[in-house]
Length: 286
Image (cartoon, rainbow, N blue to C red; front, side):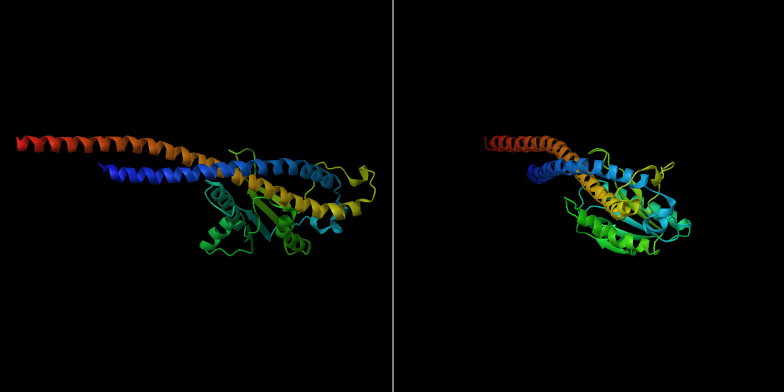
């Protein structure tokens, strides 16, 4: 049995850890509120923008707008992986990385070697540690992603797709359903594909013309899709961190209860031993 001094030292250590995890839980809860507000603000605009762009789709526009080009065969693929810059958020980063690994293996089985673009330090660290070459890295996204962050991530890839250097751009990020549900999601960013049964642009009265509208909307739609993924990823990260820190705090509390009982037993045994020694010494003197 550990001595009372050793148990007391462990109690202090666990209590300090509990205070840290409790503080981190409170910070994550505060950040989660702001992050979910951004998600709720971004979703309606993104959905409306997607409806407009895909409703205006027409095959003849593919010749004038390269982002609408539908490659006959997929050979050159770029995967954009979004992870967090920090850990201590449970399996959040691991789930996203695993999704990219499975996607990469699936493409490799088809004879396609995709290039990986990492957004966030955790994804970058994972693949670099395993000697997997990354096509690009971007670690400038904070807790409050911006449209400028989205453009920095997708701008160069969009230009390469328009030039025919890429056939497909896939985005792997977390879908924010709730603080407890943040599954990985794979979205095809490029090419922009029309929904089945999409109406022709001739079905609408457009002013200005469809060409002018699409010239402005297509880059905005792609950029907004990335921005929406960034804000959902940020919210999912804070939700996962809050859940992980709450679990750690609860575990520390249970451990403290166990250690306190052990300390009381050790202290009681120590006192009993001291009393026995005193009684034995007194009997020896009598």
